[in-house]
Image (cartoon, rainbow, N blue to C red; front, side):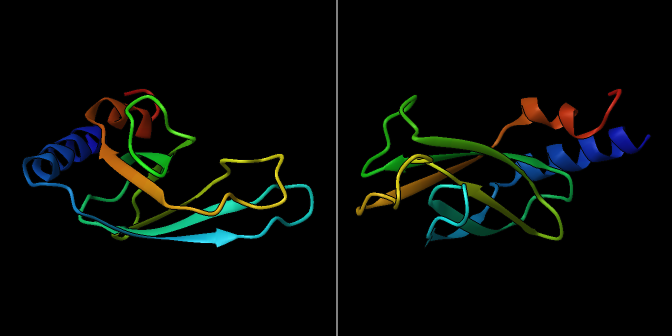
Length: 114
């Protein structure tokens, strides 16, 4: 029943335009991990909603994202770390663009056995 309730909430949220507000930050490498582009976001999607995230460098070209991730909304927020250049000592200087999508096809993965 919880799955059905979430599905109805997700469809109601999809009827509205999903809203994402994000801030990207460059994070220096620590230990064995490479440099990171950290992202803190807010959204109007319900708790448990899965969100596709793509990171582009300089401009958006579909299929050419330099890093991808999936985040889960909780309390109107979600966060993620992108590692576009894991073997580098720092991220390349320039403009980074994050694209977020509420993907209805991902929502059944939020609940096991659905």
